[in-house]
Structure formats: structure tokens, C-alpha cells
Image (tube, rainbow, N blue to C red; front, side, top):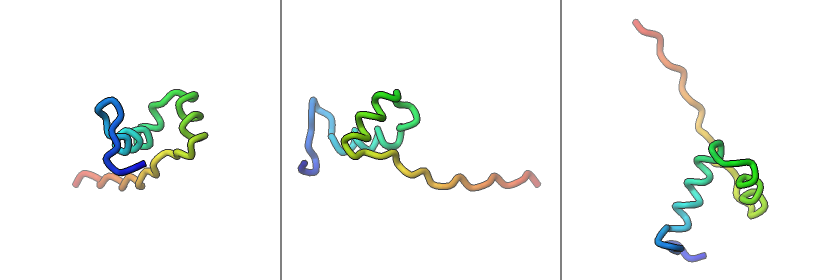
Amino acid sequence: MEPGTMVHGMGVGRWLETQRQDWHLLQDGQCERLAKLGVRPAERPAVPAQKAAA
């Protein structure tokens, strides 16, 4: 697929990245279908520990 590919007015790459970022919000069936296509959830960066109030 070429960069900038649009389907129904939406960029496919942008849509795909949204699915990867919001994997935890998707239904099980949606995750299964994306996984069959080779799509995996985005890796979440480690959340830094909050500093204690001084």
C-alpha cells in the first residue's frame, strides 16, 4: 500500500496507528481480526514514577 492511501476519506496509515494505540479499547473480535492481518498493539512506553510532593 502506498503512503497516503485514502479509503472513504481516511488515511489508512493513520487509521492503523490509531487501532494499534487504542488496542485496549477494541473488542476481542476486532483484535483477533487485526492480529490475523499481522497487526500488533503499539508498545507502550514505561510510565515514569510520579515524584513525591515536597
